[in-house]
Image: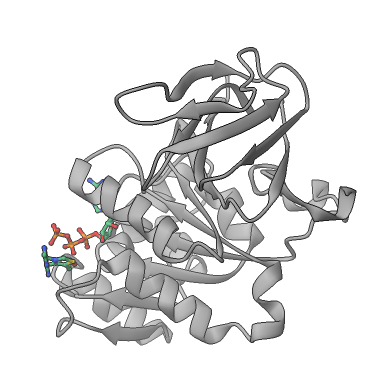
Length: 261
Ligand SMILES: Nc1ncnc2c1ncn2[C@@H]1O[C@H](COP(=O)(O)OP(=O)(O)OP(=O)(O)O)[C@@H](O)[C@H]1O
Ligand SMILES: Cc1ncc(C[n+]2csc(CCO)c2C)c(N)n1
């Protein structure tokens, strides 16, 4: 039974040398969206093997990484933190930023002809195209700037979780993270209490869930129904280091991220 659990660990919020070798994820990719970079962005950058900016996300990398790491010269930092790819409809990236990264060798993919998918969707498609099938189960895509800000963008970003429900994708803000718990699995969430929690939530997405069962929460669900207009589990609290979740519907898991003192 143990093997049928899908495990989740936010080790990407810990320095890479603290990474535990038991994790099923060995390959992180980073997508930077067009919202303020979180203070822990340099950490995510270090974990990632592939770094992609969604259109105006490149402006954030260019302007804000230097503010987060003020120990070094801005120009040095700008050339060190070079994205592998910038992809999107290119209506938000500044010309000077585009030219700067192009000169450094960043691949630029202009998809302004596609006005039916979001820049995040375009970036996820690119990362999946680059990942051999055999490696897809070890891939986890971290997305900064995905929450807070414009509500239509937030919902578009959550829709990407549903559209790519077979891919591990974590949406991040300064204050919390969100990912999908597909109904196909029982889930074991290893809470890294030094950096996340205790506030958390479980939210049915797309359809009501007739039966969800959890362990490890202050207000556990016990074959409980959740639906919008009825009960959804917000403002819950993790009790210990492991939370388990089982449901007949896909659920969103969200947990707070602790601010550095
Ligand atoms: N305020 C926000 N809240 C949440 N996500 C955002 C926000 N702003 C941008 N994003 C994300 O960053 C991506 C790139 O942002 P960018 O501003 O380049 O998008 P855009 O295509 O120009 O958006 P729009 O044309 O709707 O303003 C968006 O596709 C979205 O996923
Ligand atoms: C029904 C419908 N609603 C909205 C859009 C607009 N839209 C959705 S994604 C996107 C690209 C943003 O970078 C744009 C402009 C559409 N095409 N179809």
